[in-house]
Image (cartoon, rainbow, N blue to C red; front, side, top):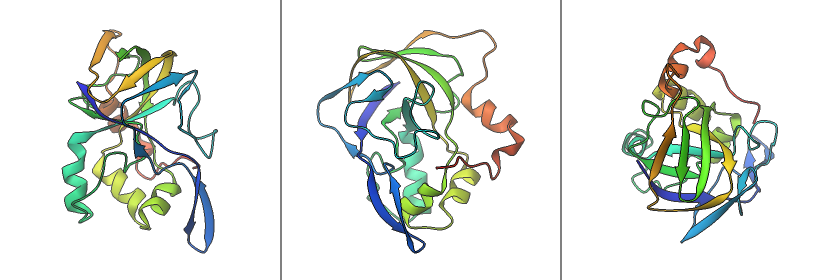
Length: 189
């Protein structure tokens, strides 16, 4: 398990359905390393702090293995890392491998796996597609959040070291499968 890309982004205004939406969904890849301070990566913003960020949603991880599916499904062969609003594009660390409560070290920063990512309407806006949330939910390629435990530095190429796992803790995939409301469940954005 390792990080392929670290991605951050500022709040931006984008047009959607006749309105202007503030979102930090669009992320850019960072060269070199970046610091985790408190509950966020330096240079990363969240437009809605109720639905994103904070101690339980400090960093969003998305598996790189999902990208080939999306490149084909969306007919976008040049989809860059960070396209799903993720802070970390990971390799070998999917919803099946990540368990709720897993303590991990990435670079010198430490985290705990907290929950799947439920999409909000801003995903539709960022992709310019009214069906993106539905596609995301049907594909069951959600990614997951990490809560910050210890400040540190993270960079592309860093390994994800599992420090501890609680016996019987469900995987993120199991949480998604067991949540009967997940079909159509969205966060407020």
